[in-house]
Image (cartoon, one colour):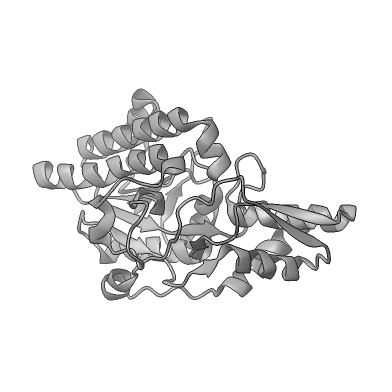
Length: 303
């Protein structure tokens, strides 16, 4: 049975991927305390000892708009360090394939919708998450550089905003869906008369259920061998104000919504062109937003 090392296996997407791949491969799923990917020596020694056939690099320092604004240097440096270590070590040990995960934040702020993979170099990312997006672009550049120079098989997938069970619901660090779910649940339980939402609700986002992203990663193990980036998403967008109403309804909150227009909206629109994933992986996201939100809500209130 082939052996796969999953960095960030104890994180949000990592748990979905581990569940999906268990029994199909021998999985190496170290915790952060047993493998520090930001340490070259630590990562090198781990790969030397365990000898994985594949590496799937999910480990990242990430968060929502607030977290990006608070710690831009940390997001840039730590993600860049991990990228360089993973690329170098996987090349040194001739790993059969390295699968890296990028971010939709790497796309330019005003990318034409839907975002096509060729658009990624056509401008600077949205300012609030540019350090994170650019750090992740290092992986994309690195995959192609190592493939060109050494003949490595390193690939780069770009998932859109994800959500689902095991997500981070810490309001200081969370992304929009877990943040909204937590706000509405707490407001309902405490009888609060209104919920405050960042921005004016006019921005749009595309959301991918993490279990579907895990399936795309699994398909890419055998089906994709190019360093050129590939979008992973649903190809469907929703306005934040409509997302807010949908979550309010799922939670059953009866109060008011107040949009704080002094807070940033982030990128105006986000929606990916998923043609390439359909062609190369035969991948289509199966979980619609309503279903995925209900799964996430039920997991959170019952955990």
